[in-house]
Image (cartoon, rainbow, N blue to C red; front, side, top):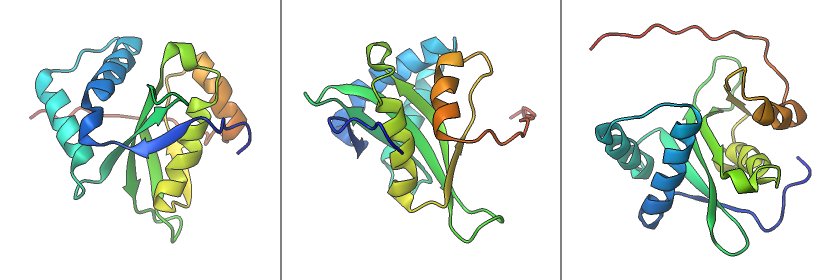
Length: 152
């Protein structure tokens, strides 16, 4: 994958990243016009740091060490390959850093973090800016997602 800026560093989330993660996670939710409860924030953060959980996170930092992007990803088995797959559940880059290669670096690193056979993700059909990157680095699967909310 070309055009990944050398100055971008992608590192797994650590306890010290919580404030930066909350800021970026909040901006990501604002972008998608959702507001998650404090219980969801706390649970998500705890899961991201728990080495026994399947969900993981990473932070992108610029050359000065500022946090400029985040990704949440899930390693999972697949019946279509002997290698695991990596699902990018959330990918967010600070508005001022978009187009700089931070998102591209996140996508490239996701497979490397697990030795995954492939990486896959979803985006809203209205997210044209992100889709320009995705169309450049990946192939559209042609699948349509369906969902059912299960009452608890």
